[in-house]
Length: 463
Image (cartoon, rainbow, N blue to C red; front, side, top):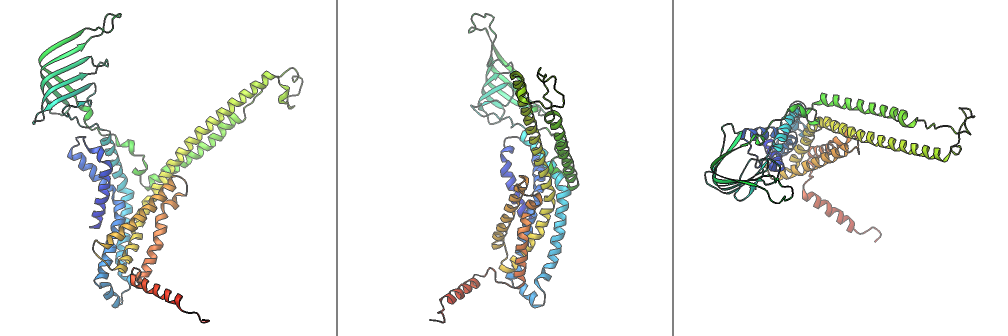
């Protein structure tokens, strides 16, 4: 139950995020069902840890609230032994979560990502509003004065034809018309009745460009066909998305990371060679002056021995060489940063396959002892506590992932940050629950405060 509640919450977050991309597209029920199905599956890695946290807290909260934990402990069962079957269940769920993240989720991300891309790139459905110009059809601007209740009959139609790219040189006006789609939904047939068309022709007189001939044509009926193929959603080849880091499993991610490491190392070696060959070791030998022709080739020549013109040439060549070397170095640096950032994203995704599975076990060791301590079941207090701990887990995960992608900390530290912080908390809570600690008992803290204040107010032995 808690799993499907968590899935529903995360799925609604997806709906609110992309609702603008769905509205007005005229998408069929099958397309929407397929899209929602795939995206509901993508919420499982996030919904599963929250579901385990909430369900374990509710389970042990109910056991504690109805004194069933007390009865089992009085019969000689320790809390660890009571938790053992659920620990095994959590481990099995974590293994299943890892299998899902590694084998099923990449395929699901590929399907969901490619379908969402096609939906977002598709044009809105062709809808005519009364009194508003519609420019959705390429080359036409259409205004409808009134639409009848059948949705097909139109009144006071005005059409500007821009297909010749010469402005508003063709205008059609009709008192009424009928709009229908063909059986294959590929063309819109607009039948105009009782109208007139105006066509402005280019002027033949170059001296008077403001006076142009015009053709006016009255008609009783005219049929115009509009191509609707551009409004139909076309499916993009999924091979274009297969190399995305979210579409790969662990082996593919490892292969990609190794390839990027080799590529980066090769670029560094080539950069050093290119810099030495083209810039660093470039010779600036100029024509020797008459004063230096008798000198041995191995003798060093001072810069001041060259003429003013040769000195200026040397400075210009050196400046151009340094400028070219700087531009080359900056371009290589930009490429290197791009590749490094791409490698970090693949490494983050590789660690994510494990962290979400381990989170199921860690959050169980938080939820189960918390339920045994607070002794409250149902969807009241457990939901509040679960949401608080999950928000902490989510914030730590996002923060660590962001720092890892920016290269501020190593990737393994950023991706395992939430687990490293919450695991000691789970161990501490398990210890407190085992020793029947009154961790959330307000009376215990009040008694301790009273003892502290009474000790501070006790008169000293000297007085």
